Length: 437
Ligand code: MEV
Image (tube, rainbow, N blue to C red; front, side):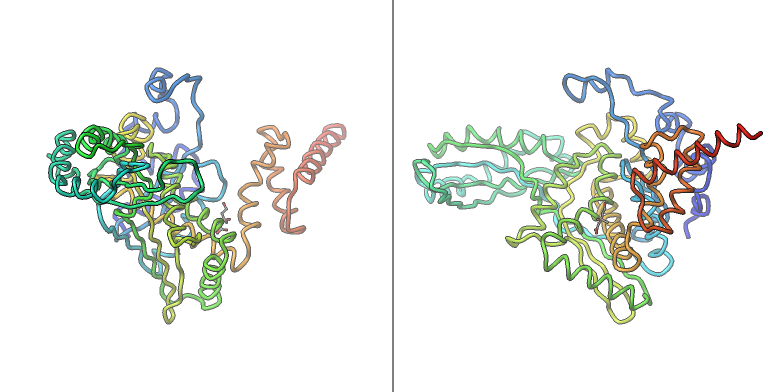
């Protein structure tokens, strides 16, 4: 167990102030960092004006922390910004199970993102390839001339490859051949979208002048299969009923895209909230993951679970294109504190955490689904939201929540109308009590 991990045990039971004291100690946060997290130090609207257009204000999401997460032997408190009840509780409980009985390791394969330069309706594809192949080194040098800072840090454009695509879509396009150049770039700690887009647009006039062909689009690809992150969980001596249930759940997702979509949504429940907390472009990662999941032509789960003797082994493999510089990652005060909480030093570290937590989240969901179901656990945590939704005042929420949990245990479900009845009963009882005394 890490030096200070005891600090974080049971933090969900603590009052906010005490919880924050422990987190401050564990993550070496300053008082100012805490004020950013609590919202006491407000982010001015002028900051938002720098991020987007037509600003009207902010949309605050709750941010919590998942604890007990131990990745590659290191304890990490994971900040997650998300609106859905029970995600953080599920990660923490599942991570605790893993840390007590096994390991969670991560891997990275490759370091190249992709920029696409498209030549649609190409007149002479083979000749164009020949010309550009001969000038590949020149193209790489021109590219790297546009991003000297990145090159100095060891990154930059490393290669250019050619893809022949034909479209037989019955359109009125004059020709049906297309050539796409993939500009392969190591973005170091950036997610890389802006820089690769600039490189591709910068190459366009050269490609056009040398080939006498007309370039169409220049844009990155979110299917970043040149930079794949993987995570592996091994849990020793798992109850075979649970282990084989989880294995069977994976088989279902492999056999059925309808299930695979929900399965992967559960994985993304672990990933997106970290991306949001750190100011990353979660749409880009989502798009990449879904495209990767469908790369065989059919949509698949991005995780796999199998029993290996008495152990349960799970793996996740997917592109996870994130940055710790660029975008708003260093501009959004909350994102800066979130990075600090995880002591992130490189974009790969952040991507590894995303992969690991995605896998853990998936395990939590599959364990619940293949044993008791998720309704009871989820609805228990969601009960206060329902209480608020049916109009419970602050002083009534706890009482309504407790009653709803009893209803859930007895009737196996809670509906809004049932919650309204509960609230009315409580109010009625109170009126009667005050009339009697
Ligand atoms: C709910 O947000 C996520 C789950 O549906 C994932 C799954 O079914 O694996 C529980």
